Image 1 (cartoon, helix red, strand yellow):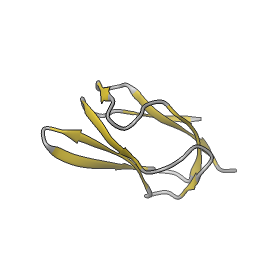
Image 2 (cartoon, helix red, strand yellow):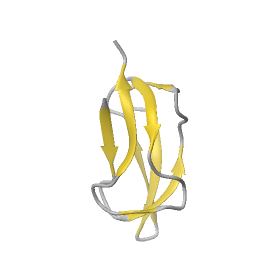
Image 3 (cartoon, rainbow, N blue to C red):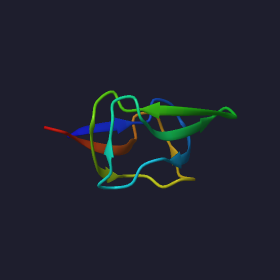
Length: 73
């Protein structure tokens, strides 16, 4: 399992995936809003979304878990 954590403090603006969804390397997973900027974060690997820990609108601190991916075999 690979956990994706917030790289900065801000608001989780949008989650672009759902639990169970298969994602490709480079696919955007979620968007954080920080300092009035929307910053997308993408997956470095292909995998399946196992867990989404936060909801859109939630405030996150740097290091808070956003979602977890299970690598594809």
